[in-house]
Amino acid sequence: MYKLLALVCTMTTTANASSNPTTASVDELRQMVVELQSEVAQLKNQDNQWLNEQRSDQVRSLIHDVLADADTRSSLQGTGANAGYSKGAFLQSSDGNWKLKINGQLQSRWLYNDANGLDSQHGFEQRRTKIKFSGHIGDPSWVYKIALTWSRGGGSNTEDAWAGKKFDDGSWFKFGQFKQNFLRENIISSSKKLAVESSMLNNAFKYGWSQGLEYGWKNEDIKIIVQYTDGPGQSNTAALSAPTNAWVARTEFRFGEAGWKDFDYLTSKSGAKSGWLIGVAYENYDNDGGTFEYGNANANESSGWTVDVSYRSDGWNVFGYMVETTGKNTANADEVDSSGWLLQGGFLANDNVELFAQYQEGEVSGSNMDMDAIRIGFNYWPTAGSNNIKWTTDVAWAGKTITNGGAGTPSADWISSGNGWRDDTGSEKDQMLLRTQLQVLF
Image (cartoon, rainbow, N blue to C red; front, side):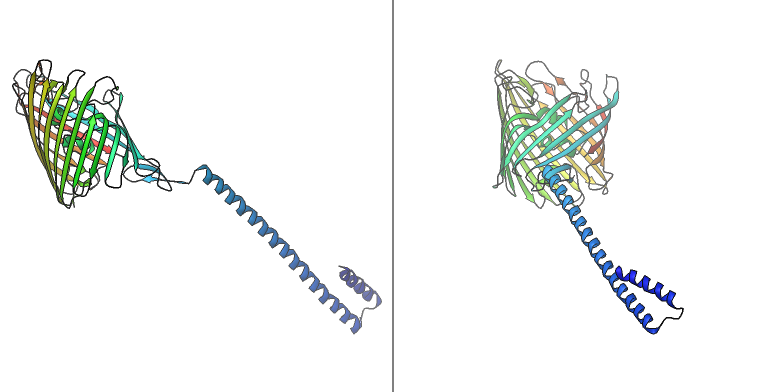
């Protein structure tokens, strides 16, 4: 800075001394200018270095703050979580040891019933409204399921509510409330059936949901399940309300390329692998608390068996079964034998449409309560290969008189508010039932 002042003073003095400065004076001025330029350059370089260091310090401080904030958020979230949709919405820990899966089911239905001697009826109903929670806790071997359903009247109910353990040898156990594995038509989910609703045979012989224990084992070709429960249809009961000892044992044999999961459906699939499934099951219960209706008998003891055969291939399927039970009322020594059989099949007209037909027949010994019905219909999937949206329509005719209930131990149980059939008047027959349903799964 002092050189700049000296230069100014020199220039002023020189200008006052003469209007024609000497060569020495000019050289001195040039040298001072060169020295001043060098000092200015050094000052600029020092300023830039200071600014760069200050900026680097600021950036390092910002990065440190961001990383600290990320660590704080990560600690608040545990180890981090994964979420998405894969056959249901799910939330899962990053290590895979905790998982919650959420599914829902809606079935909106319209039906028309025409029975001789009765006024025809038609109307809408919300047949099924369900929400399901499933997954595992602690590690993938500890599994659970909770399924809640809302009835057509609006009240809620519990279907599944169980916890279980899967073992490395292919075995497992369940404890809680679950569906019992007797009749295969009943075992298959309501979202994966062929027709709009299960058959009248299913209504009479299904075990449905109950509370108890289940042990099972399977390999690639054989599955064995044994259940000890409170009996058929005894869901959501108190421990001391109905002292029933009920056993269900079922064995299944698989043949061909189709896997176990391929037989979870009673509908056809394009490109499906071919295979057979043969099932055999036995049921037995002893109800010390009184009688209830099962197998077309109002009894406190029952034993029975069923055999079913399924075949699947590319674009078509066939399924059939036989069932027979004996109900006993020990109070009056009455005994009722009831049996039935069903055969159905479907094939894909194209990738989106399946046509199907079904025939069923049932008998009750010593009474006029026999039943038969034939059904035809179609399934339509807007998205080929996806069961998330399905529209099903079917029409059926019952050739014999449909009876509901009865006097004494024989008690026909073919119809329910859910399947749409009605109790015929007197000896009337040839009842007709038309149903159409939209299903949405998520």
